[in-house]
Image 1 (cartoon, rainbow, N blue to C red):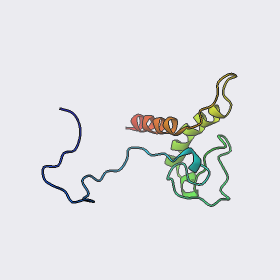
Image 2 (cartoon, one colour):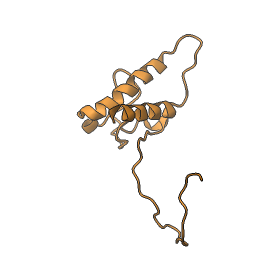
Image 3 (tube, rainbow, N blue to C red):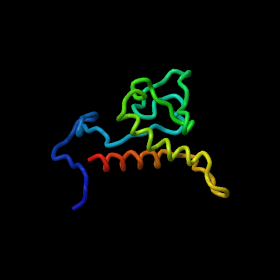
Image 4 (cartoon, rainbow, N blue to C red):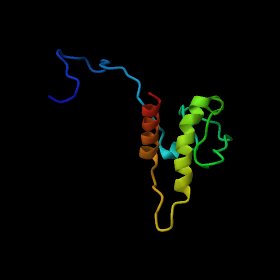
Length: 111
């Protein structure tokens, strides 16, 4: 009844119990200016932001990858809309949840 992982014996501190890759990951908004928005690798400070959303940056490898571009293109449209919201609506201060949701939806569509 319920979900979880339960030990059937005592485990030493630091014992690896589960190893899994995340279905999706995004960086904090504060890291969007210093990390690739797709692979999350650190970028040189000279890396320009995306010309459309003016928020995210891509490393050279991701910029050349159609699959990585697909990931950013979804987020790019949403981020561009957030930069100029309708009158009376304040843009969100944190876009992590939105960007993560978009990646999970993209993953579901591609399965």
